[in-house]
Image 1 (cartoon, helix red, strand yellow):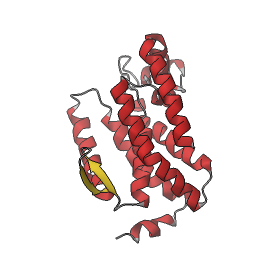
Image 2 (spheres, helix red, strand yellow):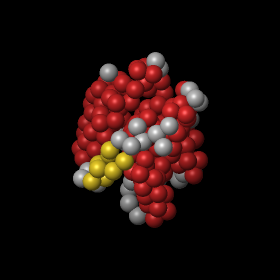
Image 3 (cartoon, one colour):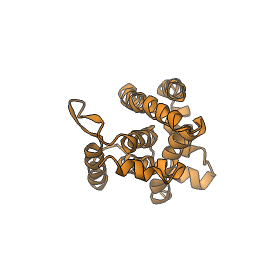
Image 4 (cartoon, helix red, strand yellow):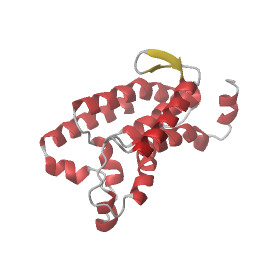
Length: 197
C-alpha cells in the first residue's frame, strides 16, 4: 500500500518540478541552504524530485519491484506500516548526511532523487532474501548478496571518480542503512540472515 502511495506522490511532484524550476529549487537538496536558512525539510523533499522522466522511471520501477516485497515481509514479521515508512524516509535522510556535512559550504551543490531511499528498500530485501535473484544490468540474474557487494564497490569507485551527475554517496549510504535497518527493528534477525549461509 505505502509503496504505491509513495510512487504516486513522487510522480506528481516530480512532474510538477519538470515544469517549474522555482519548485525544483525549493525542494532540491542543497546543503548550503539547509545550514544557512535552516531548511531541514530538504533532507526529505529532494526524494520527491527527479531530473527527468528516465530518472523517475528507473527509481520508481526499482522501488515498486522491491518495495511491495519488503512491505509483505514486514507485515508477515508483524512490523507496523510505520516501520516501512521509517525505512524509506530514514534511508532518504541517512543517505544525505555525508553530503549534508561535506557540501555545507558549497552553494552550487544540488542533489535530487529517491535513490537513497530506494537503495535502502533494495538492501532490506537483500537482507531478508540474500539468494533471491536480482537482474544485473537488467539482464543477468545474480544472487542479491552478490549484487549487493558489487553495488557497494561500484558506488564507492564512482564516488571517487566524481565524473557524472549521479550522487553515488547517497546510493552507498542508503544501501548500508537499508541492510542494517531490520536489525534496528529486531536485532535477533541477524540469526535469520546468517541461517541463509
